[in-house]
Length: 454
Image (cartoon, rainbow, N blue to C red; front, top):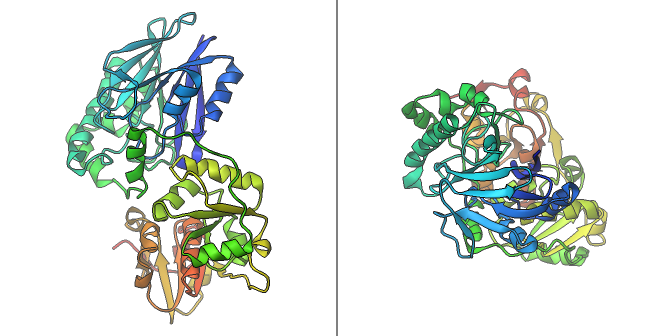
């Protein structure tokens, strides 16, 4: 018998996998915080004998090198990946024994497209394929995006994705479980994955790479590519150089005076509380990235790379969870941190800042004189409909373009409220009069606002 345990990395929309038999197991595409995988193996009572990477990741820092070092496992990386550390290079067709007693082995299958060297791994039980770890190749209903390596390679890699998907479909039985790394909200996915599990047979009926000819597939694939988070530029180099072990010990404690000094120095002070609490009262100049939102993705995307960050959290648990998320994207150590609430974080006699929250109905009922409606959604989202007369500055560009926001009271919205709250905090810190529209964009037209598509 075999098992496959899936480790969710929900903040980044990724998954890692632990698979094995009664004695030994393999880990596929581990996140940087490896303790969760070590604990999962301990619960199963198995030794991690192999750690494998499907590709050099562009969206997070891997824990593979450190996990292999700690456990003594063999570390397998596709042979075509140029890395700066010792590893076992994997070639198409290579096989490795995972658990002899259970008859488990892993077969490497070259599936270029997401990267030129991308490799999938077929888990076989007594020679029969039971699952395939597809990394960023075949996802649920879609494929991994092909534009993260080199712009000049994008079309060729898109065609390779189509060919790789067809190779998987042709060589594996229909009941083979498909276990990708990306596709659950990850920006590495070229489309939105629907559902939590799938098989080769299911993908044959619905995956765009398997139901369209190569030309129409590539045309649609390239047309649908969305913005790439800025921090991705730092992930590949970190993974090829060999990531350092993580340090998740609590950061130095900052008092109100230090928080003020760090703000005065131009550093980022990030309040992790929910957007409702932040709007009601916060340290002037601090920025709001909710701990329960896509913290790692948006903070790493917006912050100037390498700038010191101080975290303000409601509790030690919230702070620890945030640290864990941030090390996955290379923000290794907060400069300082504080817990509690804004009354403890502001200096004595210093007033807290606040701003109003509203709905699209509130906006529709307000005279538009002196009002700026700011849409911070991405280009692809705005193309599906926007409030007439609104200004468009995608969130990930806003901190560089605050000077482009027209004068007036700024009513900022996104698709649901989380990104609008981040944007509102940026505007508030810059001294603007801001209202955060904490509402679903679907409500805009129902509220009486004119929504256009062109």
